[in-house]
Structures are given as C-alpha cells and as structure tokens.
Length: 339
Image (cartoon, rainbow, N blue to C red; front, side, top):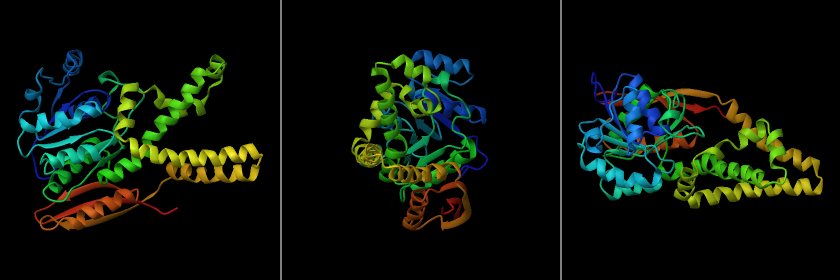
C-alpha cells in the first residue's frame, strides 16, 4: 500500500454492524492486523468468536493503528471522530462510511482534521443489519466514494484509496462531499423514500394480503430497501434532507408526466416517457469503460490533482489503482464510454 511499503497495515473498525462488520471481516480475511470495537457487548463477543480481537474499550481498539474506519450510526460519527482523533497519532488515517458527507467533512475541517480524515461512503448494503449479516465480500466491486482534499489531506486520500482498491477490490469514486450528497440523494436516498411509499401503500391497502400474494419481482425489487432498519433510513434521509427533497421534486415531476399521460389515455406520451427511463436503466446495466492513466507530482500545488479526481467521479468514472513514487503519483482511471 502507498507510503507504507512492506508493512502489515493495522486497522481498527469502530462500529461493526453490516458495513463495519464487512470491513472488519474483509480486513481479517486479507491478513491485515485488524481490531474491531462496538458499543454492544454481544457484538464484540461475536467478533471474537469470528477470530477478530474486539477489546471492551474504544481507546484500546484504536491505539497504534494506521487507519480507523468509523462505521457507527450517522448521527454519532462527528463525536466519535473527535474521540478517536484525540487518542490516535497524526499519521493515523481516519475515515467513515456514512451515507452523507458534506456535514461530516465540514465538521472535520472545523476541528483541524482535514489532513488525516477522508470522508468515505461505500455504496453497498442489504436490507439486513448487524455483524451477523456482514460478509467479507459485500464490498467487492462496490463504488466506494472517497472525498479528496488539497494538501495537507491529499496524502491520506492517496493512501486510503490504494488500500480500498487493493484490499476490498472496490471501485474508488473520488468526489467532493457536496457532489456526493447530491448524487447519492437520487442514487440511494430517494429510492428509500419510494420503496417506503410503495410498501407502505401495500400495508394500508384493503387487499393487502392479496397484493402480497401476487407480488413478484417488480414489487420485491422496488421495496427491498423498505426492509432496512427504520432508524437507519431516517438518519440517512434527515442527514441529507435538502438534497433529497430537491431530487424528489424531479422524480415527482416525472411521475406527474406519467400520470398525465395515463389519465389522458395518451399511449404515445406514455411510451416516450418509458423509453426515456429505459435509457438510464440500459446504461446502468451495460456500462462500458475506457482505461487511461494520469500522473501528478507528489509535492507542490495539488489543486489540479484534486480537480481532476473530482471531475472523474462526477463523470461516472473511478480509480482502479494508483502508485505513489518518490516524485510522481500515477492513477489508473476508468471513465464510462459515451452512450
């Protein structure tokens, strides 16, 4: 991994639920020196049963670590960040896996932690929760957003991005915190609202049991995330409320177009709207990427490097690898082929 050649990376995972537990189990399977901690005693006991050390005290878990993943509930991350930062060394990289980024990035900056805190969000999960639902392969191939910052934070980003690609086989998507929150609102957060609305309407329907008896793939797929623990969903939506409401307005407008066409019996308009929607669905399923490399000087002004990284993420691209040399950092990038 970058900047620590030949060293066995020392990892701590704080909060070992679904995502944190998957980070924990993958790190363990990859042979890293990993320690887990969770406020729940039974969860710590389960981690030990799986062969991963899980001290009873947070300070013991994060002591002398190279990287700490903060994986607790979204509202707890800022306070946990301060607590962990206070008891870890300056070379310890800190990151989180929360579903919103702008607020925690601003919090870290306000407390002078930008040089070693890299906001992150692996776009993966299930409708289950807890360490018992975690798995070492959950994050394989996932889009894992990391938010780069100019010096002094870029070195931490480079090192962590290398780790995420190398150990988790994830696709690192570099984005600014605000761009992440806007994109995640439509890619992840609004779908939770729609899934909740569909499942909730079925729950209230007079023919509820008949609806569930007839439910096939479209209903099951469309409501999957409605099974997510409700408090976790509420935290996510409230943490990105303004952007979710903005993107929801666009979804509502498109739904209004469909509704108007249906009410008018306008088959041509209805067909056109579904053809438009089908274009995005086809692009999601059949995305192809071009590969290219880009190099930047290790030292000096990193504005151009951060700008290029964020532009890559906004364009739908990702990092497949990177190499930090004495004078140059080389990125292996993948950018989607134009439709």
